[in-house]
Image 1 (cartoon, helix red, strand yellow):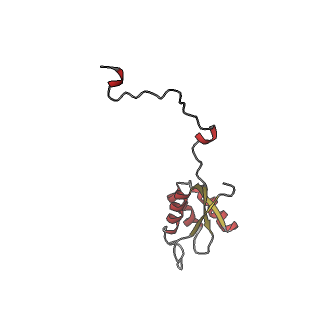
Image 2: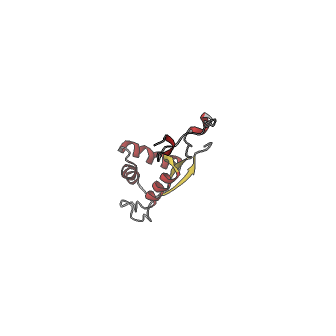
Image 3: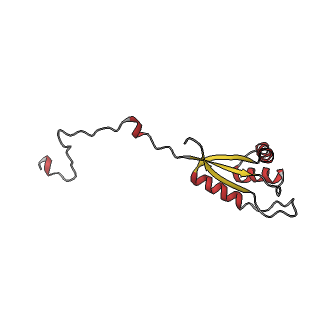
Length: 120
């Protein structure tokens, strides 16, 4: 059987070369990053925020306390920076976390938003 008669044999075209993309175009595209921002209110305790940070984000208790303090003193805190889809998930989990059991008049979960990281 002649070489050209074999099934599945593909010979390269002569005189053609694949051009390589410039180094910049070969790198994977960087996904824009988003901040998850927790907003202050008067309906939630430090313990509530600390517990939420532990359960939703896996943060150690001390980091949860630091975030609670920042929210209380600054009015907001960035609790995570990640991809848009992950940020949306974490924001929604904060909204669904529920009432603070230590506050009798607590109306529900805390409020969180996402926003793009500036300059990305």
